[in-house]
Image 1 (cartoon, rainbow, N blue to C red):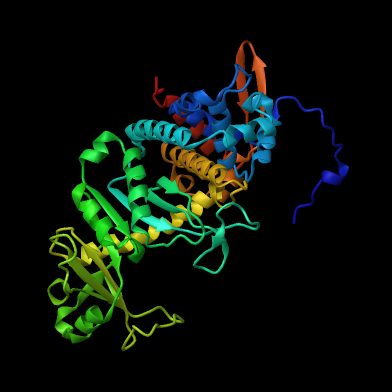
Image 2 (image 1 turned 90 degrees about the vertical axis):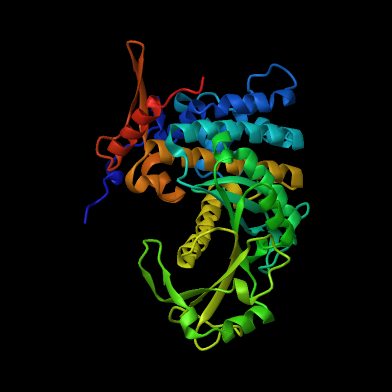
Amino acid sequence: MGRSTINTVDVKADGIGLSSRAGTALLALMAQRLGLTDGLSGALASTRERCSAHDPGRVLCDLAVMAADGGRCVSDLQALGGQPALFGDLASVSTARRVLLSISDDELDAIRQARALARQRAWRAGAAPERVILDFDSTPITSHSEKELAAGHYKGGFGFHPLLVSCGREVLAAILRPGNAAAANASDHLDVLELALEQLPERALEGEILARSDAAGASHDFAFACRETRIGFSLGYTIRVPTREAILALKEAAWKPAKNADGKARDGAWVTELTDHVNLEDWPQGTRLICRRERPHPGAQLSFTDLDGYRFQCFITDEDGADIAVLEVTHRAHAEVEDRVKTLKATGAAHLPFHSFTANAAWLELALLAHDIMVFTQLLTLDGEHSLAEPKRLRYRILHVAGQLTRHARQTTLHLPADWPWAAAILRAFKRLHALPAYG
């Protein structure tokens, strides 16, 4: 094993142009390249009381970079502010806090418009998903104090219960809700659907869109709203007595093998269509009911609705297609939204630092900004495992790398450690970033 030489090294705080977060500059530069920084500046222009040194929109963008970098509260901005050679002169903690507290509903709308414009540019540059599928999900956020509208949630904890919509790797929209908000609230689903559609580029709105959710989103109001806006739906369906009886009455020949995402048969799983066996008159015309039965993995506990060693799950959809196994694969992919929830929490949403509900709603939008910046940086500048890496790994390898800025002959150079294992990946990322078309 190697031996550390730190005991024989003199330590002095006299370095110039040093940064412990050289890779984080990718995030700040990506926000500028996509026009997000200037967009936020315009969004918060009305909150600027005087011609002060710090533009509120740029302060908000700095906070988003901080959250993507791993910050959990406003005071963590000091980690970037303490490195002016790379990140410039950042606002103080008190100024940044005032910016967040100045954000009302009008400013939130303007911030969302700035996000939508940046997304349009990112998609045009190559970050667009293969198919526009809107995944709906809610998640609890724990609060360790009695903040405004914090309440007990369905998992037995205390805090908030936001509802969000993702598309591919991105989280398009989220609304903050009290902790006791119902997971199956149709009105909230309609509100967040509208916010998500506002985030999509015009070309995406003209194409095919699918709304996907678990049983919490399976309401008549939501399904009919999708139909009115020409959006397909694939929603989890709660198994009640009529559905249960229809499943048990089926003959074995009615079941066909289920498939995996690669198109191969899924071991121990079968699918069938129940559309003609259950009353679906209250749902939009063309609604289909599909059921999957599967042997649970070893150690899983069966519920009282599971019989003969099988676990049954149903969903309704208005998608066409003779191969119901393919439709079931598409619906099962809704589970990917859990990864989006996890990464959103890793970019600031896991902790709501204010007592005010309005301020915490602004912080949630800040987390969405941070998530956008992180994902666009991965999709447009990184490759291989780093384009898919979780925020924690990305910070260890790419963002939190030491660097030194030097200036010579009017040329500024950022020096990275020559022996850093991922230095080549960082260099490629900066080159690709500079090659992206500027938004202007």
